[in-house]
Image 1 (spheres, rainbow, N blue to C red):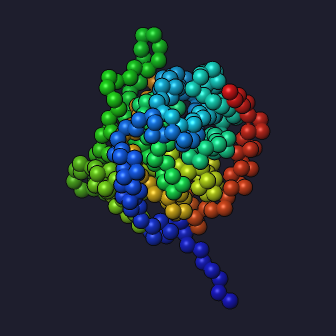
Image 2 (image 1 turned 120 degrees about the horizontal axis):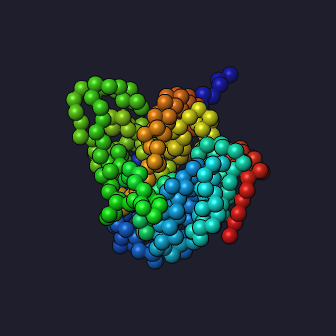
Image 3 (image 1 turned 90 degrees about the vertical axis):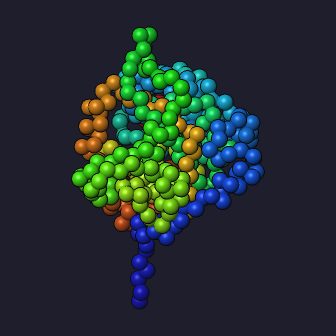
Amino acid sequence: MEVAVMRSLADTLKTLANAHQYFTTGFTTRTSLGWHQPTPACAATGRALSVVIPARNTAYALPSVLDALAAQQHAADVEVILVDDASTDATFDIARRHPAVTTAVRLAEQRGSAAARNTGARLAQAPTVLFVDADMVLPSHVFADVAARAAGDTVLTGFRHNVTYQALPCGGPLLPEGPPLLAADHRVTWTPPVGKALPYSGITLTEELDGRPLDATNDFQNLGYGRFYYDWDLPRMAVTALLAVPREQLVDVGGFDEEFGARGWGMEDTHLGAALIATGCLVIPLRQAVGFHLDPPDAAAQWQTKLASWPATLAHYRHLLSLPTPTGRDHAFATAADKHLTDAEVITR
């Protein structure tokens, strides 16, 4: 009797294209808007969007972040769900008082960003969930950009412009003049080290490279079929600093794997990207959706801690790639998220 061997997640990714041009050109044909064009509010009319923000000790940036959300210009039905991962600063107090926040949740104990995002997604009502970091200040058109373009089989990714922390005399972070720069994101402009193994692919470059991942891959289309651009593949382009996903697909794959949080920092968004791609989603960039990513006052120390744990989370990701594509995990997703909510404080407007 033959035993069926299920294809691994890694092998499934090798069979799938990311040819999304038909989708982006179709949008332009229907709306007369360029895919990468900032979107007028009226283009989002009749669309719904759930914004989920995981937060942990981000009081230094959160007022600026939420003020920017309150200033979004859109005609969509938008809810903002902030999940505080048991912060020890004023994060939750800021969230529950700010008019931009529809639902503020405080977890009883720290469970990690994956758990916080899953908890928010469990409460989300819209068919599209937009994940935004609690230190991302967005231009006023981003909600409209996402709401007008979202579909049940797309993963829409924005970009980030990191800003070194500088405090204003009256408190709060100093923002640069002018709009955020697309080129500031490593997925757009990338200068890798020479003579040192790259952490994700393991390859070693022998000469300097002026890396242009976004342009060189035709807006990530050439990363289909499991292909790489040096140290970058398609799942790695799914960065939850600013990422919109279809809620139904998110729930079906079980949301974010919360084991990553137990091991350290990073890779849970890459794994979610891989799972969504394997179920048929396209990864499409929004070049106009760029936010200021506000570094914390102790950014250098935090990065050292994060990078020290990255090998462990990368190893867990490699293990998950060897397993079958996660599907049919909606019950497990709901059960885990409901457990987080059991002893959480929830304030809804």
